[in-house]
Image (cartoon, rainbow, N blue to C red; front, side):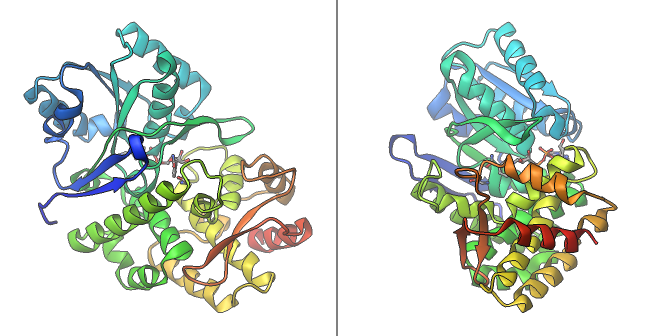
Length: 372
Ligand code: NAD
Ligand code: GLY
């Protein structure tokens, strides 16, 4: 991978922030954080797998070299950590360790750590600064950018949270070397999502390069991450609080995905990115059933996802769901407006839009087929 560092910006006026992308940025984090945060105490929030992979040590080495004082808080890995219980424990540990208004939370990990630590930063002492140091492909292309923070509840995913933008995002592509293949594939699903919603050329390029991206070949991997980040940064800058409909497009496949995750119980049996892969297939099927897009485009997407080693149906992972339970989970989704389900659909690659007039019996039929 090129050693060169690139920088993109999320343009949000006074709350704009840079996304630095490069190989080995954790070692350089101290140097990159110093201009903004010199003299302030850092709290590195991470999880056990990230620590075991050596990334917390690499980061702290860089922080110490830049004269930062810091403390480390290690949480258990997995979606179950994005919960009220762990939020409370994290806040408690931060306060116990002496966090104050000028403290900076450093989220080092995947989307779980980023979402939880970001939410803790949003509410600790009515809001402290935080930075995102994503270590999974999924977090590097999606969750670390845009300021959506939060936790899951028994009613569904991400139902309690806050918009709280990080001050900086450091995407160190070297961290991907220790990421298990299943997690890489899950992250790849979110990359495919960007092509589906707004960039048909990118999607076509991914069809040829997807396997190389998943396998971590430096040049294609870097290009895919950069393009995904450009799209995410642009969409967030246009619609930070998801009010115009533009940012909602990033939820392509997610109404289905969140229902699959809720019914799977947020365990290791189904990763978020895997749920997104299956959800995108359902979204394109729904689009075809409503006459918006040819079903040949669904078949093309299915081939692409399968080639990347992603599941396209719950049965691919040995999962069994009840249609009624999935529909009930969908009714708790944040995209429900005035009690009506909303879906992000497409007219074909790169042409996503929001539909709120989808008949529930059609969704029921589609889910019944998807579960057969
Ligand atoms: P994750 O945070 O659970 O990380 C996946 C696994 O990889 C974990 O076991 C973790 O310990 C391990 N890991 C992390 N980095 C590693 C590394 N470099 N080497 C080895 N192991 C490593 O999951 P994720 O897929 O990163 O994120 C999923 C979460 O992100 C979900 O909760 C989802 O809702 C959320 N999300 C949020 C947004 C947003 O905008 N805030 C967007 C997309 C997804
Ligand atoms: N991942 C969806 C969003 O950031 O809006």
